[in-house]
Amino acid sequence: MGYYLAIPILIIAAALESSVLPYVRLYSGQPSIVLLLVLCWGLHAPLEEALFWAFVGGIFQDLLSITPLGTSTIALVLVLFGVEVIRKQVYRVSIITLMGMILTGTVLHEIIVFIVLALIGAPRDLAEVLPYVLMPEIFYNLILMLPIYVILRFIQRRIHKPELSV
Amino acid sequence: MGASTLGILGPFEDIVSVPLNAITGGFTRLSQTMSRLLSETNDVNELRRRNRELEDQFIKLQGELIQLREISSDYERLAGLLDYTSSLEGREFVTADVIGVDAQSAVRSIIINRGTRDGIDVGMPVQTDLGLVGRIYSVSANTSRVQLISDQNSAVSARLQKSRAEGSVRGRGLLTGNLRMQFIPVDAEITVGDLVVTSGLGGNFPPDIVIGQVTSRRKFEFELWQEAEVSSLINFSTLEFVLVVTSFRPANLTIEDVPVTP
Image 1 (tube, rainbow over the protein chains, first blue to last red):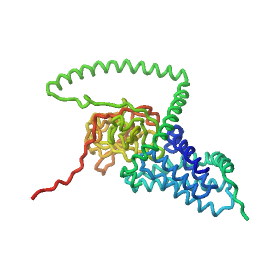
Image 2 (image 1 turned 45 degrees about the vertical axis):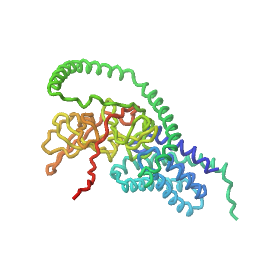
Image 3 (image 1 turned 135 degrees about the horizontal axis):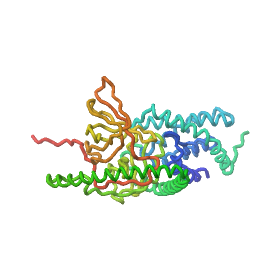
């Protein structure tokens, strides 16, 4: 069921990122709704399902960008693997853990996109990306992480049966 | 990613992007309506003050217009004598609505609702009545992506209108649309407020399209070039429609190897 939900949720999120969220940009940064959805969903979903979300979310983001198809997908998949490593170290997800994951995920995501853009010959100026893109993005993501996490967790509890540990 | 760069995934991208662009366009129209409603509730006094300022400016501009008409008429007579064709004649435009902004915050591009079906092709310049917006970066059947001149990887051959000094205008990637004109000869005169226009060198853009206005200059004693900060007249964050110049094809300056017969 989680696989089917990915497409409508992420298509709306990508459309919002491209249409509505630019109106709330702080300097050049805006909330990364697709990243937040992928990370929050991936915290409690099976890895395969989370990877599907990352793949689909990345495709939709790249279709609304001049970056080649696959740029955001690579970034989201790698960030998801990073978060998976952290997830296995913690017993339960607290707000501090969530903040740490979102912060790490946002920074990693921008760094990976920065590297990919540099590799394809479209480098960005790091001195401008860091203060004007990354910092506002972190600010917005930390504000939005809790409501998005709560909503997704509510949906996941409805569709995923809880694992029984013996 | 390699397949996308080579264009192999073009049909897949075209199919998947149709519903995505439709949803994005809907959200964009809604946000533009909301934004317009909010901005229309401005202070009445501010509007009255602005109205007075505009009326004064209008009177001044009318005087200038009369002078310019005289100059234009002299120009036409002289151009006719020299059999000179203006570069503005014969330009064809396609109007396009802006339906989205690049989802990557570090990239400055917009999405418009015209594509190959409307005669749009990669490299075509995009402008508004206020000046240059950018150029078509990629195109599908119904939509196109436009790289803005404020993007960090955008470079436009430009010229200062008064001194005719040439340089290259690069985007700084910031939201405000600030640009920087580089490689201006060190002995060139840079005047704050001077207009910067496309020079046409390199063949990527037609000449004489306004890019912006000089806001400050930077000159260092031991450098070979000087720089100027340029502010675009366009507010890229509130662009609603643009004009694609369909009659202009960027020049292909690739040197092809021609086999030499012995």
